[in-house]
Every structure is written in C-alpha cells, then in structure tokens.
Image (cartoon, rainbow, N blue to C red; front, side, top):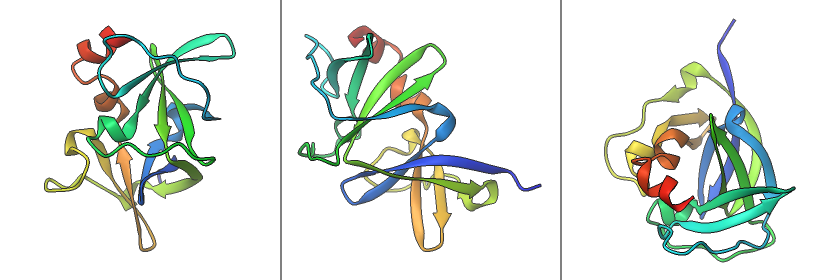
Length: 150
C-alpha cells in the first residue's frame, strides 16, 4: 500500500503552504489577540480559546514577508507539537489534501521567500506546488526566543 499523508493547505499571499494534518488541532476565525510585552516581532500575542491561553504568531512576519491585512478569510490554525500549542495567522485555510509520499520532494536549496530551514519539502498535486512546512523549525527556532515570549 502506498504511503499517503494528509495536509491542511493554507495561503500566505498567493503562495500555497501545507502542514501535516496530524499537527493541526483546529482552524479558527480571527479573534481578538492580546499583545505580550517584549515578545519577538512575529509573536502577535495570546488568545483565549475555550479557556486555554494560546500564543499566536504571524507566519508572514516569521518568514520575513510583509504582513497582510486581516480579512473575512483570515484564519488562526491551532497546531500542536508535543508540549507546545501555538496559533498561526494565515490569509486563508483552503482545503485538506492527500499526498502520496513519492509526490513530496526535498526542499529546494536556493531562493524562495521562506528559509529552506523552515521547509519539510514541496508537494506536487497536478500542476500545483505546495510548500510543506516543518513546524518544529518554525516554532522552536532556538527554543529560547519563542519560549521566552510565551
């Protein structure tokens, strides 16, 4: 049997990104975010989600991209990594896709708007390319800067 993985697809600007569905807890509409003093620039603050306080990062800022305006399509994807739960602001969450393991290639070593350190690979669906993110590298950069803010 072919090894198939499922991914949640979302957009930052015109680019399509994906994260493993096993790391996604929920996808929420934008809600009020409480700022946290002295947090890194990409940490927007914290939200109260059903009684749980969750830090929220702006993925565009994390990747060094221009921040986007909040629209009706803006979502917060709540992801979990072992002991860490974080919300990620994205322009829109579009779909869930299944990708055979052999349609995922290693990240390219040159160019692109996102550091290849943050990438797990690139998935191909027909003529579409999905940038698959490595949440471990994004959310635990050196552990210290993100954790200190949270």
